[in-house]
Length: 250
Image 1 (cartoon, rainbow, N blue to C red):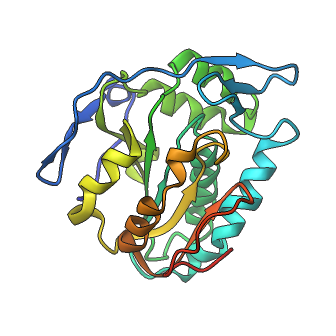
Image 2 (cartoon, rainbow, N blue to C red):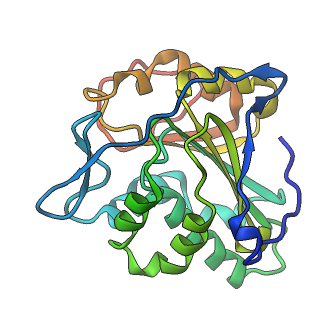
C-alpha cells in the first residue's frame, strides 16, 4: 500500500476518498449499517449491537494509554524505529480514541525529534458499524485535549460506504485508512498489500463474549503474516484465546 505525501488544507478537509479496491480483489459490496448508540449515566457511549461500552466509564483515555500505547512500547518505540513510516493496524475503530491518542503521541515525538528518520504514521483500522459524525463528535467531547484532532477527523468523516476511506491529517504526517465492513472479509483481501508491513496491532473489538467474530484464530494467523518480525498484539480484555505462534504476549 502506497504512502503518498498528501497535504492537508481547509479545502481538502471536505474531500473524502472512498477506495473500494483491495490489492486486486473485490471487496463485497454490502450496505454499511451505522452504529446504534445509547449513553449511560456516566455519559459513556454504549453499542446496542454488542451491549458493551466503547471505552471505560472511569477513564477511557488512561485505559487506552496504558493498554495500547504502553503495551506496544509507545511512545519510546518511535525513537527506536529506523524507517520513515510507522504502520499500526486496529480491528475496531469505534470512537477513534486509540487513534486520537496515538496521533497526539506521534506528533509530540515529531516535535521533540524533528531530525529523526521516522516522519509519518500510517494507521489502518476496520469498522463494521461506523459512528455517525454527530455521535463521533459527541463522544469526542469527553477529551477536550483532542479538540483540534477531532475537528480534522470529523471534517473528513466518510459516508458509510464499504471499502477503504483514506484520510490525510496534520499536513500529511498522519494517514488513516479506515476500512468499513466486516474485518473477517476485509483482512484476507489485503494479503499482498500488508505482508510484513505492520509494526503494532490494537485489538479493540468489544469483549470476546459480546463480539466473538472479532476474536477468531483465523484473524490472528493473518495478523502474524502481516506483522514485521518480533511485533506485538495488544488487546483490552483478559480472555481465553488460543495461543498464536509468532506473537509475544503483552
